[in-house]
Amino acid sequence: MVIAFRDGDGVWEGAAGSADLGRDLPMQTCHRTRIASVTKTFVAATVMKLVDRGLIDLDEPLTDYLPQEHGRLPNADSITVRQLLSHTSGVYNFLDVSFVLELFNRPDRTWSTAQCYERAVKRKAEFSPGEDWSYSNTNYLLLGRVIEAVTELDQTSVVQRELLEPLGLDQTSYHVDDFDFGGVVRGYFDLFGDEALIDSTESYANQCVGPDGGMVSSAGDVLTFYDHLLARKDLVSETSLQSMMPFAATGESDFPEYGLGLEAWGEGERLGYGHGGQEFGYRTFAYHFPQQEVTFVVWFNASSLIPTGDNIAATINAHRDRLRDIVLRLTSD
Image (tube, rainbow, N blue to C red; front, top):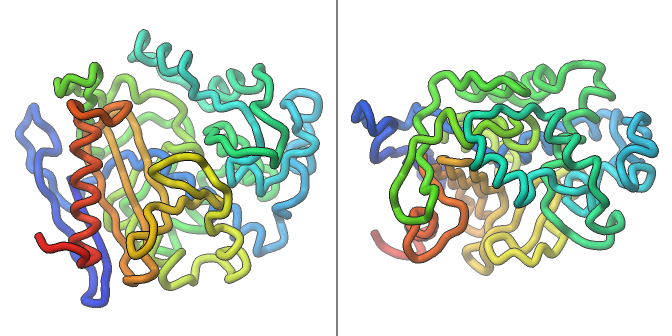
């Protein structure tokens, strides 16, 4: 695992464990990981910068930007960019149970973002736009295409121009449908929930690599990004940042509210804003806690699907919570 946080005393980073069990390679703070859905905040911030420039209107229909989806994607004429960002669009999530089973049965298959989108567009909407909330990775596949439509540039270069270069995030990489993850630590997956880990670095994880969760980064770079967005507040306009803050009830215990690429985690003095990410063999958590003025990032190169009493996800969550409370000085080490 790797942890990085900033408080009133400055920035601290630490690492523990192994980056590669086969080579007995110690984990270091400079190592990179697959940050999975933490990518969504990067994509949302890119969209909001384009909103600030007048290139995107949050409340205009999707078909204003992607007219080809008229009559193809259910409710395309009434879905707004805001609803895509907040998972209130009703667009079907390609990453459903049947797709997860497909990943398990064919662990070495590589899926493109176009293939993943085609899985979703053939299904009925989960609900009418704005009527409910449901997490859908398909929303962010569409947002990547909106970015390209309004800029007439590849979304990779737009994210690079708007975020990675200005913030000096040289340990962060974003390439759609590019599975060459140079410098990324090995990932280990508790496939059967029995604490037996398999190396999933080049298997099981080969789903869509793109705006739904395909970015790789270091803890330090992720810390810098969230610090500028939520602590320094100098990445997007004040109006855009307020629009991003969580407002939609999710029904999820781990993040009860969701905004535009941001989740609310915890409550009371433990209330933070940011995003979590889960990939086969990787877990990342990145949040800013305004009450303590602390930004906190921790990631692990292991995961399992659902936390139970006897798998590694439960262990990871327990250590995540313990480290958060130590960093927030709500408990002693």
